[in-house]
Length: 248
Image (cartoon, rainbow, N blue to C red; front, side, top):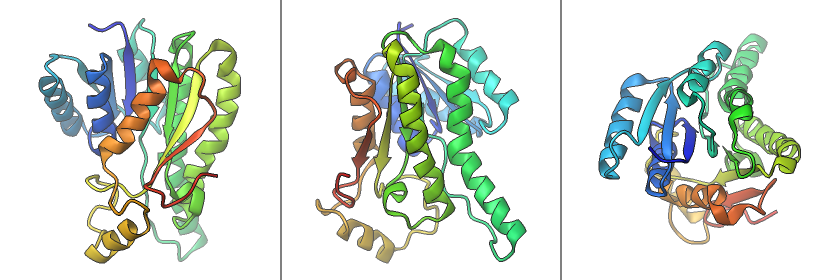
């Protein structure tokens, strides 16, 4: 057992699984949280095996929009301190917006998936954050900075304002709070079957480096922010987007 613990929501696939693998390599024990038991169990076993640390990753099945289920994560942490909390759960939620009722449901679904999950998990684990030295990372999106995603863009942008408040609240305890804002990242479930070759090409062309991002690109940013060299970095939004949106 490591003396450092990380909790990663949405940790079964894509960016979340890549972050879990990176943090295990850095010596963390990791709890991966999500709704799909089979996906989480497979990811935990695979990452632990690949990193040569049996049991380093443990799954916690929970719908983080449900306060009662969030308590499952608290129970899994037990009496340990949480050194790194990575709020990665979320994604675009579609819906029929032809009516006001449909619009309301669509917006609630996106706010629940992207904002409420992060708020409830962070508030539940807030007493367990290591003081001093705890790290909180919120995974946002380039859509928060340039729009284009409607309710999804608004939900991700909400994380930025909340991160600033949280950073101010936790700063006196030397707990940092930062946002990682990825651009187009291939090899995730985000687009499902909605991505076309033309859509991929347009997103790559919008970068300055001429390629799509990878989950490992985002992982590198998270590893820095939760590592020992980032103690003086808090309340920041770190874009990982290949130059698709320039710093602002």
